[in-house]
Length: 79
Image 1 (cartoon, helix red, strand yellow):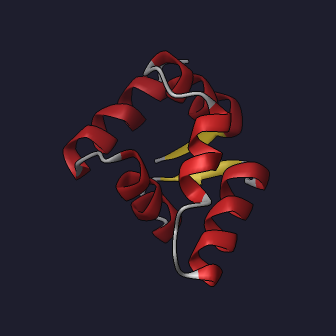
Image 2 (cartoon, rainbow, N blue to C red):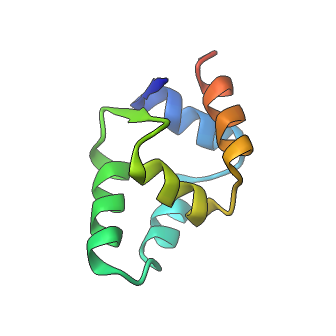
């Protein structure tokens, strides 16, 4: 499934994640290309695809499991 930017950002807020905190975590990614690509996706994406590579990177940044991300996407689809 794909989430709109609003759905994704609201879901993060509902789970207690603030966008500035997530950006700070993204900046800690060692690989420059991965860091820049992830930040680009986080700040500028119009939608978020569950199967996108950046979603996997975000999963790791947030310390979540695949199951938790699936549940996150299901929650966000209700907004």
